[in-house]
Image (cartoon, rainbow, N blue to C red; front, side):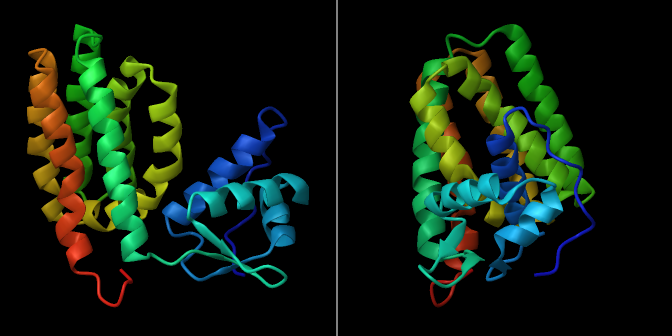
Length: 223
């Protein structure tokens, strides 16, 4: 299993979560490619940890649909299955709709300003073809109403299913067609600023449905 240069050692605090998040990020950004075999010993050496947190992280990644494990055989990075991504898209869209609807009355003027700043950063990243920066800005923008909603159940579901969707979004955000999301973000922010809960919720759902054309290009169940 080819791996990049040794990663910086993970700190002792929140070790399990740190290992999980770093392996998840490596899968989402393509460092660990679909179909690649994952050996806990190699991953442990790469992250500078013992095998135990790596094994625990792989179990969580399997539950999230990012890793496939065959009992008694091997663990591999899950392929981009069209149905799994569609399912994740539906769940993520629904959770953000719930969060936005609840958050509208809780958002402060500063929250709205931070959403606008995040969308500006998002647009700049798209124009220079920087998918990683675009995803970070998109996460920041959508994370503001999620935080304001303070719904732990919504947060937990998004934590599990958003990474499945992000693997596909990297393809969109690396190209100019992703710029269409900037206008949708503007409409979402304007609705939030106007305290229009129904309108903001509807636009939020529409935003997450923009992946549909990319999913429609899937053939044979694979992206």
